[in-house]
Image 1: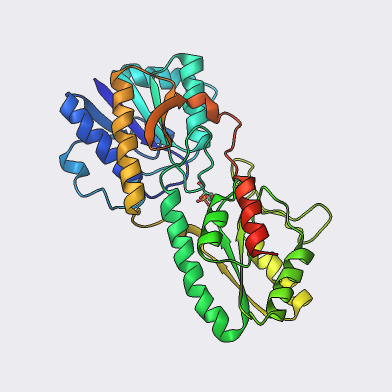
Image 2: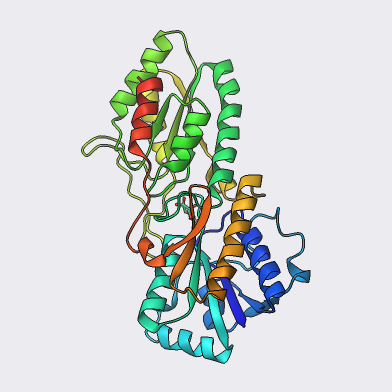
Length: 343
Ligand code: F6P
């Protein structure tokens, strides 16, 4: 069978490990794998490369994706579904493995439902916001990178009696902020799921300083929002898909903290460092397990499904679960951490 593979949406550590696992297993099964460059763009433009055990050698620790990635899908074109069906026929594709986040998996599920196309999904994102899986690969690496940064910031913050505002990724879900903030002993953690009140954040920082702790680390997810009617107000520019081009909430709240507390404040936006570079061992293993399981789903012709982690087991779940859904943080855990450490 010919199996197509594409990586869509933002890149994340572990994508290459999935590709490698798919190729290794498919070749053993006697299947042929072709990889589309730049996601659906390459798929529709017939831009692909044959993937063999030889050309995926050494990929396990490599960050990013050798296939390249873009956002966008066949649904952006009036004749996109027809062109997609034609491409399946042209290349005699028996299956397509879509490795992507909520957007790519939603597109995969719609193409399966609307056009009956044989698609299997593999969930990836550093944001960990995909419904149906306990964890997506890439998340563990992002949390580790953010935690390492927070650890380093503690010592310089302490040396200067400063407040450090550390911005991490997380558009709709504050998983990275919650986990890295907890692991790094943050003074406050601001997440999209819980609109924040800057006055409360400042009161807490002042109270902490009053107890003789001069350095504070405020971790803020890029998608965190203030409570309605409270500062800061940010007018984000839009990206080509009409989404807010996030980034900058830390710079917006830093002067508010400085004004209200009188303390010296610095801003660190970790940004794409969280997404670049080698995956952790955990992510390499999870990505490998997902790649192997995706080939099993193809062999079983179990299309319209994505591979997911539930507990310790890799299982399958409908890709359609991702449509319009976001896996937000566990608010009970947030409350527990807040009550113990921010008050
Ligand atoms: O894919 C997840 C993510 O890293 C989000 O956390 C972030 O908002 C977005 O991608 C950034 O996208 P881009 O790389 O296009 O700026």
